[in-house]
Length: 253
Image (cartoon, rainbow, N blue to C red; front, side):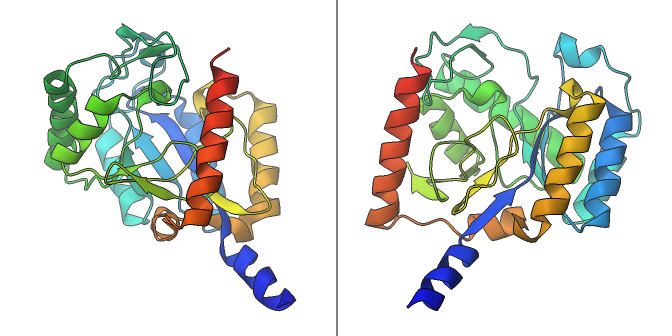
């Protein structure tokens, strides 16, 4: 019995490396260091790509004129390319009424279904033009509403790298791979993703990330491994519900 439990925990514990704000303008020298680190330890991260970046903060970084070739080269390494919004420009205030109660400003929350559908569709068209398959999405600043979910489904995107949960779960006919923490934390049980904004990193942040990778490399999983762990059993639904309610209350203050 003990060996069974130990095996079950081991098979259902892992973390997906998710990098946010991958755009033409970003901290490319640091991204190159991350790429070398991933290659060294055979890590297959998920990259949140901004297809039509108009974010003034990101635009302050040097532009990579070889951007889409770079994205395709990562795709060839079996890195997962995920849609991270369209322009990454926040034009709506959430007042913490967004689906996950993150608060702050949003590119999607508060817009009509038609507008959100249009933004997702335009982003998909750019990826299609560049021969990049998109299977997943996560919104800038974690901010969604029901229109976001409807618009994603109508654009045939059914996997979201966000949300509260111990394990990946299904809700509103969508699959969610949870993202819980602002830092790289591997829980003793469960499957989640990280949230990494390397454009904000200092040297110490990269060093700490490298240590995390080395220490936990056996538990770092790919997007495909994570999505296969979608579990909607009563036990996990109950735990996910409790976790969601707790974090929403905490984030409402």
